[in-house]
Image (cartoon, rainbow, N blue to C red; front, side, top):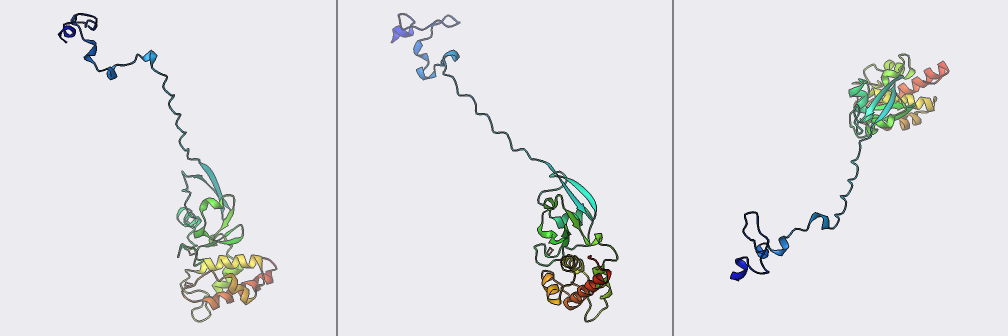
Length: 222
Ligand code: FES
Ligand code: FES
């Protein structure tokens, strides 16, 4: 109505700063803002869950008599295998990583005196344990001596290329620690997880039996 627009009458709005009058209907009702003091209290913002904190821990592994400390994950990724740690980080390259899936025995080391496949074990699992690689055996170890003595080329040799030898030696040392006088069948059984691509199985078994004889002559265990 012209009356409302002219600013006269009860329907007129408040005066603006310029002196002109703005009709109350100038803004749609929905656009009106409720004074802050009258607004219903807004729910408190949710407290965010604390972010997952990567926990660090020290892993201590004794290798060939020397303790090594690693801060996980800074110094040692949790997924690192014991084989990788020993070979690539600590330089014990005697053990070999051939299949890398627990099928050949080339990576055999001793963990607290027991033969383990280091490619199938995480390095962090060796925390607090003693690891022995072939470098940690004494030069006069009867198994090493027996393999060395049985290395003439030809049938009956215990090694040709030597790639499998550290794994066989460590598995044999573990065997003789448990059973210093094994039978041929027991030797074959104990070494059945180790593969020799040169096919020196007969010579290897013979070397282990010779090592057992040397051991008996010394009256001790390897
Ligand atoms: S490399 Fe570990 S079992 Fe073959
Ligand atoms: S001596 Fe060559 S793989 Fe065993």
